[in-house]
Image (cartoon, rainbow, N blue to C red; front, side, top):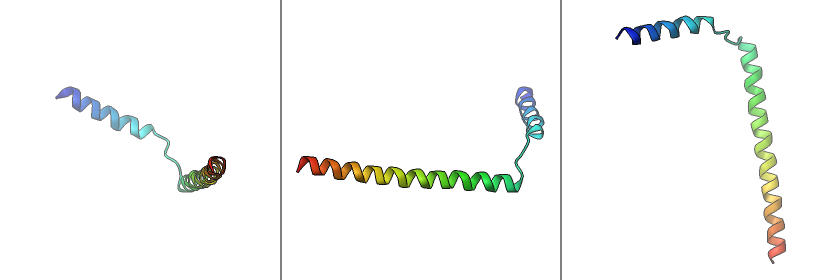
Length: 60
């Protein structure tokens, strides 16, 4: 039981040392990640559509 208590007290101590991002920094990072995901999703959708049409054209 003492090991579990020590573990959680160590976790609390380490969490106090964490440098949490400010609201603005978090917002900018979130927007960057979401826009990158949307861009690559659209890019690969167009690429997939193009390759599918090319394969259908070759097979017909």
